[in-house]
Length: 259
Image (tube, rainbow, N blue to C red; front, side):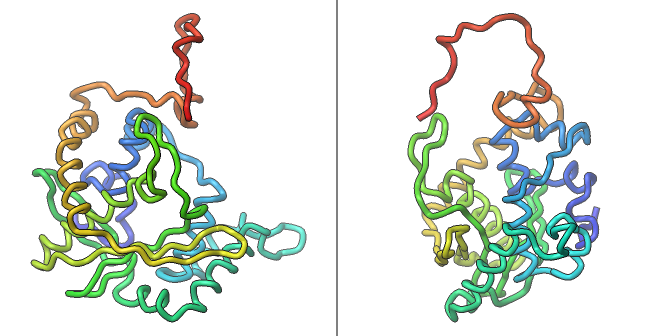
């Protein structure tokens, strides 16, 4: 299928193409993502995700149309924005107050690229793309503090959410289509009061490493997506809690202790 703005997020596109978000979802919980692809489960949008979308649409999309599709952001009694979305306005205003931050939000917005990685079809939709110059992804985040990830120890905030792998995918697809291997940046706004802003650039060596890690993980992910092997359950997400089927008691001493 030929991707466009209307069908990019369709179920058909999710079945035909891989994307950074789909890979990250598989790495988070294989069973949940396969259920989503099969249209057996739909993840509910959290307030945090909706706040992020509000900020994204302000800078890179059609905010007016998005607002019409999300009446839940308004107080039904007063008609005003709910507190969390007034906070999103504060985040937007903080970003707009900084000339350097605004500079990195210039370029083509929501540009779609397709290509292949390890022989598998991939798609990407870039927040901000300046041909021959740079790739920028806009992120809203709690803060810039490091944190613990199960089985991985302490990681940078961006590593917890696999942002380096996401930018490595974007860079590779742009390279395949243009011949330019462009520098990649995160434009980040925190949900703190007051919000903090940073522009982070990725070292090429890290992006190269992330691409190699992705290629090592793809055979298993593709085997799951095509029902060759059974997906693992993370046993901690909404899907796993909702679909858990007990087979008997468990030894409490085998319960994982997270840092």
